Image 1 (cartoon, rainbow, N blue to C red):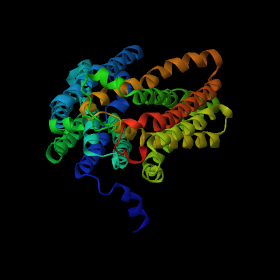
Image 2: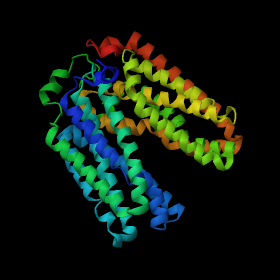
Image 3: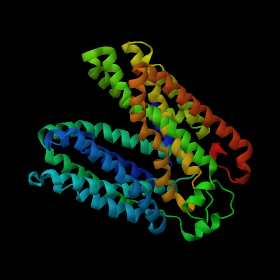
Image 4: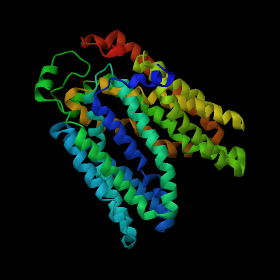
Amino acid sequence: MNPIRRLFAVYRGLPSPLYVLFIATVINSAGMFVFPFLTLYLTGKLGLSQGETGTFLMLVSLAYIPSNYIGGKIADRFGRKKLMVISQIISGLLYIPCGFPGIGRAVRWFILASVVFDGLTDPARTAMMTDLTTPENRRPAFSLAYLGHNLGFAIGMIIAGFLFEHATSWMFWGNAIAILLAVTLVMLKVPETKPSREQIEASYGSGASDEAHRGNLLQALLSRPYLIVFTLLTGLYGFVYAQHRFALPLQTKAFFGASGAVIYGTLMTLNASMVIVLSTPIMTLTQRWKPINAVAFAGILFAIGFGLVGLAPSVPLMYLTTALWTLGEIVNATNEGTYVANHTPISHRGRFNAILPLLGGLGWTISPQAIGVFSDTFGLRTVWPVLGGIALIAAGGIWYLGVHETRYGRHRYRKEEGKED
């Protein structure tokens, strides 16, 4: 077997619907033309002020919260595929009117409505992937989805930039076509995956880490204390990681002046290239690790990568630190979802995949404002050791959580959870 085939052999033997979902993810992400350029579109094409644009983007973010929760509940009650197909078709169709020149500023409300229906889909998509996998093959399945998203996004950004400048209407119509094409694949090639009532009943009392729970969402969450703590600790990772979009461009400008924007752009190119090229080999190298230990190791990479950014105005150092925190991103992305999926009750997969990202995303949400205030008070270069310390504390907490779970928490589970158990 040649080296390339050997490298990708880790993805062999997965259920065939997962390959369809991979292709659909690539198409969907490649057609994600609107959101990367939404700020520029609202300010440059529609003439909105920065304040109006900021308010609208906040509304978009807030719209995801009830949408995700409702989507999770629908996915658990009526099925994953039905929800995905209906909501994605509506989401795609809502982009079509946005491309007509006469629509003016009303385009904002079509975009917002599209976001609401797209938000309904997210919990169903993740629940479907969990339904289709087992603890033994879940890590390569989640890694494949992560690779598909980044591969598609890298392709889409090139196309989106051209469309924004030369054919703005097709930015919306192309996004709609991509959504509808991807959901058509799902509709034709992916079966409904919602666990049957018999499967859920058989799960009660099984002792498995994804054992069904008879209570409501809150009761089910409280029955998974390790998962709650894990989500909060990885939320600290999100707090740190968010600064690659906020403090890092400010730091490159402070260090390198007029060249800072160009250098920051090359750092983001390095990040994207590493994610695409290294996701598969890193997943292969770490597949024998317990997922929770891999996530803890990712935190160490975050701590070093972000913690050393402000050390000196050195371009090679900026590339080195970016490479380190990008490795942390890859290790975390290919293991965090696996741990969560393995610990989510089979009866609540849709709802857990709606609530946990919101809970874990709090760190990302508050990070720009919190670090902005901190840097105004203490200086930008002091931000980085603080971020490194936060990541290191979170990594230590996750590592200890894994040790504690192995010693004291796993007696409830009689079934193996891959290497995790």
